[in-house]
Image 1 (cartoon, rainbow over the protein chains, first blue to last red):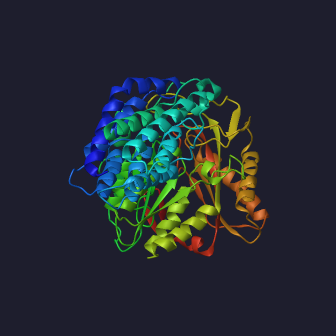
Image 2: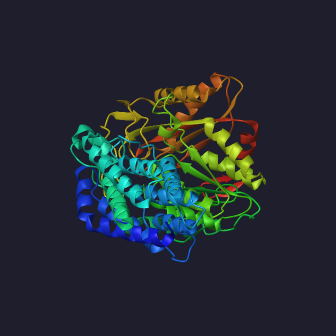
Image 3: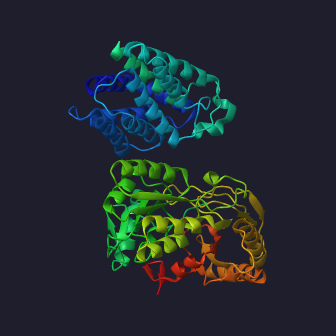
Length: 202
Length: 333
C-alpha cells in the first residue's frame, strides 16, 4: 500500500459515510444527541482535504490528523484525529507491506486508547475498531485484499454486537438499559469505513 | 427562575466581555486572535511560559490572572464551554520557546479533550510543552481516583506559584515540580446556597430550595451530594475545613494558605465570617496560616456560595506566593 492507494481508500470511505449520513445521525439520535452523521462526515472530509499527494506517507497521515483536529471538534474529532496521528507514528516507509499496514493501524489504535478508556463491550466505535485492527494483524501475511476483507467483517461483527450492550461512555451512558436494542453509531461508521477500504483494495 | 442580567446579543457575550476586560486593564493585558488573553508586556522568552484555558462565565477566572508574575496567556472558550483544540494549539504555537510551556488544565471533560488534542499537535510540531491537570475537588470522596475529581479554583494559587517560579528563571522541569507538588497538596470544597442561570439560555443550572445548601456542588451546578438545611457561617466553615484538613493531611507545624472564593452572590461580609472560623480551627490545630485570600476569583454567575481552598505549602511555595504579581485580579508587591 502507498499513499496513492490509501488516498483512494479514504475517498471511498468519505463517500460511504456521506451516503449514510442520515442513517448514522438517526442511530445516534436514538441514544445520543443525533449529530454523529454530521460529525463523522466533517471529520472524514477534513482528513481527505488535508492529503497532499506528493507528501511522504507518514507526513500525509500526520496532516490528516491535524486536518481533523483543526477543522472539527467533539469526541469524534479527538478520536479520529488521534487515530491518524497514531498511524503516522507507526509508519516509516512509503510502500507498506502487510506487516507494515497492520503495524500502522495498531499504532493508530494505541493512540486512540490514550484518549479513551472505552474498550470492547462499552458500545462505542471501539467495538468495531479494535476487532478490525486485530484482524489486520492476524491476516497480515494473507495479502492486502484478504486483510481488509477480514477487517471489514470483524468490524461488522463488532458493530452487530453493540445492539445488546449498555453504554458506558458518552451521553448514552445516562440512559442505562434503554439503549439495548440500538446499534452504536460510532461502531457503525467505523464499519462503513472499513467496508469501503475493503472494496477499494478488492 | 427569571433571568435578570445586563447582556446584549447572547451569542456575542464572550467576545464582548473579553473586549471590555482588556479595554479596562489595557496596561496589563490584551486580547489577541479573538479568544486568547495575553500580557500587555510579554515576558522574556528565555523564561517558561504558563498558559491555562477554560470556558467564560466564571469571571474573573481565568483571564483575570494573566499578568506579570502569573499567567502568560489564557485560552477562553464560550460560556461554560471548553475552548476548541485549535485555539489551544494556536496559543502554544504563539508561546513556543526553548524554555518551554506549562499548560495548566482544570479537570473537566471538554477541557481535557481539547488539551489532549492540542498536546498531540504540539508534540508533533516540536513545541516543548508539559501539561498539568488540576483535580483538587474532594467532594467525590477521598478514595475517588484523581481522574474523576474536578478542578476547581485551586488552579488560581497554583498559577501564582508556577508563574513566580517561571519568573525566577526556573526550568520547565523545575516549574513543573513546584506546581505539581502544590497541586498534590491542595484541596477544595464548594458550597452553594442559591441557584443561578446560564446567561445565554436563561436555564437554571442548579435547583436548591430556599432553605437548602449543598456542600460539594461543582462550578456548573453539578450535584455534590452534601445537601442539608442552611447552616450558620461557623457551622459551614467547620463542616468544610475539617475534610480539607483530612484530605491535605496537614498537621501541627505545617504552613497553609486558606482561600475563600466567593462564587457570585455571597457577600464579602459572609466570606469574612467563614474565613475567620476556618482559620481559627487551623490555628487551634497548630497549623500556621500564611496571608490568605478572601474574594471572587472564580465565579459561577449569580450563584450564592463559595469554594474553600486549603493549600499545604512547602517553603518554596511560601516564597512564590509572596512574589510580585500585577495580574488584574491578583496583585502582590
